[in-house]
View 1 (spheres, rainbow, N blue to C red):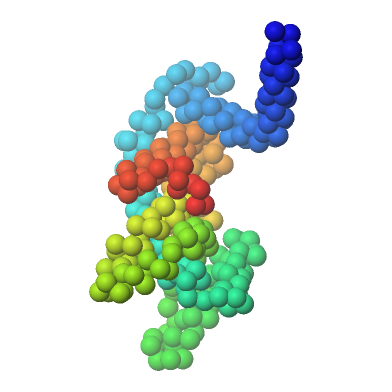
View 2 (view 1 turned 90 degrees about the vertical axis):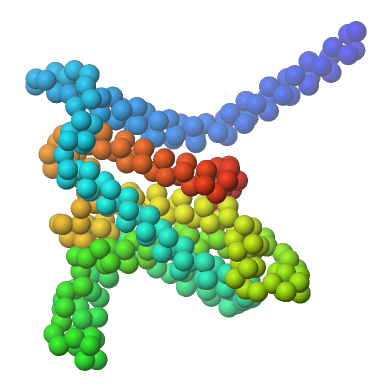
Length: 300
């Protein structure tokens, strides 16, 4: 009995040491999540569920959410932000899929590396610089309006900024890489023999795309859509600079409540409404496509 007890205690001690080592390795990430994500969200939740009744005096209330429901401007901005974010995500997917297919399946070697670098180059500078570049191109005295006049398309320079289409261009441009990378990861794992066999059996391009390529790449597609939608929905700089004061983007409303009006309770409520919207859209996307969240996140 004594000889068998020693190995058992040794195994238990080794298991405990392994768990302690794992906990130590995870400690920095857990502290980061707790200190910068969990606790601030809890604090914001408390702020959103109270109302100022007197200087430095607060009472539990849903007044901040009631204000959102009763004010048409907030509703309109909320729906507009969600609609344009979904549209920007779909446009990004349509543009990124051929790029990802070319990189994953049609080119090899140095050309493949070159195309990847070309996708990365715009992200070597900050989002502010990229957005200001679009402003230089599209403003009334910018490069593109002058080119349109020289080509005879317009008789005088036109202002291309401060339009919904301009905001969409900026959002798609800033999000493209985050759609391309998951798509490349998904498409590279597709066996070329399946496509060749489908052609041998009489399949055409659209049917192969619909029945083989898209189902195989579905986790990558959904992963890219989730990331792009999240980034677009929470984007502040691009809609504000390209859309101007009338961009009507919901993150601008949040910024205004926190920074301009010093109404942290209302800003916190707006933040949680935006978080609820993004969560609902992601959940709906997973349900409609039948994908599992863990499998999708492995593609990001």
